[in-house]
Image (cartoon, rainbow, N blue to C red; front, side):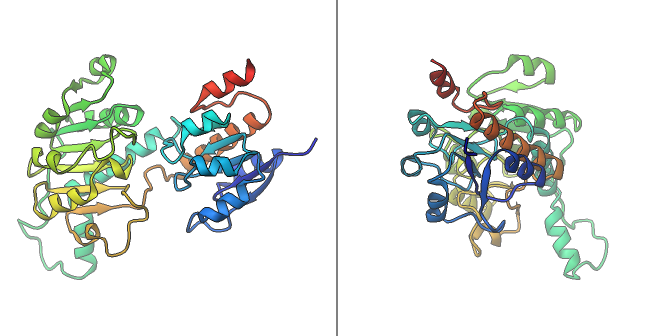
Length: 330
C-alpha cells in the first residue's frame, strides 16, 4: 500500500518531523523566514493526502477545490481563522488544531507584555543603550502600577483564565466579558462578569483573549478607546484584526489611552514604517506568545499526531470539525 503524501508548510521542531517521516512521504517548504507563496502552497499540496498548515496559510474554498486529494489539514496553531472550516467540512476534509498545550506559555507572554508596557521597559532599554542615561531622576520613565490594578479580560477561554490566575498574584481586581458566562471561574478566581462597556471604563489594563470571528473583528475600535481610561493599557496576544489598528494608532497618538502591548497585527508581518512602529508608547513583538522551546515542540508533535492519526484511519485527538469523522463512520 503506498505511503500517504504530506506537505509541511514550514519546518517543525525535529521530533515532529521524525514522526511525520515515519508515517508518510513528506515535502517541506524550504525556509523559515517567509511562508510559501500561494502558488507554491497550491502546487505542492494538490497531490497530497495531508497538509500541515500554519496560521499564515490561507486554506479557503479555492484552495480546497484545487487540492481534491486532501483528507486532513492539521493546523499548527490553536486558532484556525486561516481555514474555511465550513468549506472543509462540506468536502469531507478533517481540520485539526493544537489547543491547550500553549495556554500557559501564551498567558506568560501576555502578562509579560502587560508588565513591559506598564513599566515602559522597552523605552528604558533603548534609552540606556543609546547612552542617554546620565543620572537617577525622580521623574524618569514613570509607568503604571500593576499590583492592585484592575484587569479587564475580553474573552475567558483557556488563556484568559490563565491570565486571571496570574493576576491573583498581583492582587488585581479582574473583570471579564465573554459570550459565555463562567460562574465556576467567578467563584474559583474571584472574577467579576460585566458588559464590555463597563469593563472598558473600569479597567487599568484591557487584555484581549477572544477568538477572531466575524463578530469579533474590530471589536475594539475608536468608540471603545474613548471609553477607556487615559491611563489604560491595551494588550493583544490573540488575533490582530480583533482590534481596529488604525483606531489604535490614533488613540495612542492622542494619548486617549496610555499604551499598548501587541504580539499580533492586522497584517503580519507589520510593514516596515508602519505608524505603530514610530510610537514610543507601544511594545511590539513578532507573534511569539507561544514561542518557548517546550511549547512549540509540543504543538508540533500534536499537529503531527493529529495528521498521522487521521491518515491512519484513527480519530485524531484534536478535531475542529468532528462531524466529518462521524459522517465517515456512518
